[in-house]
Image (cartoon, rainbow, N blue to C red; front, top):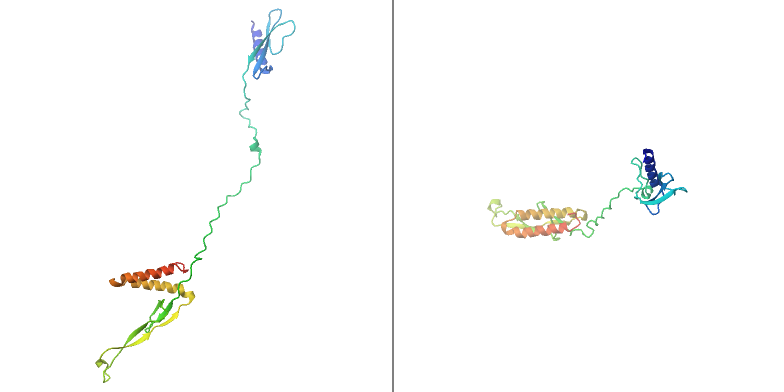
Length: 211
């Protein structure tokens, strides 16, 4: 077989494989044609009249078309959809704070009292306290150094109800006074004074005085 004939034969095979209709998906039909002189031709079309024809079916390979490396893939439907506008992130609203001390009531009334010597204190007792103030005694001759016995004068403290606007401050003063009485009490009075301090502190903390 001559070289030109061989090249023509190979070219015909590849051209036929490229454009021949398939009898089934992926198959290629090749026609082998032989003329009167014995020359052989392979082609993808039926042989001309007067030539000997042989038909062969070659099984092809199904391939998926590949896009060139430098070509961009066509946009998908999802990519073609306009992007939804981005909403700024919002923070969850802070939980509403409970009504501050809505259930608390003002503390009980207090009274501010003044002693005979101008000392002041606060008390829950509306009845002014009384105390016996010592009196100086003299002798029958009027000499203060010769006095015999002891005498005192009973006096009552002067008390007034604390105004509502100053009630919280008065209770804080009352708490401080009972704390001092507890911490500096004699040993036999510690438990009693401590219990009184805790009672006053509890009244203040459960009121609407902000503690």
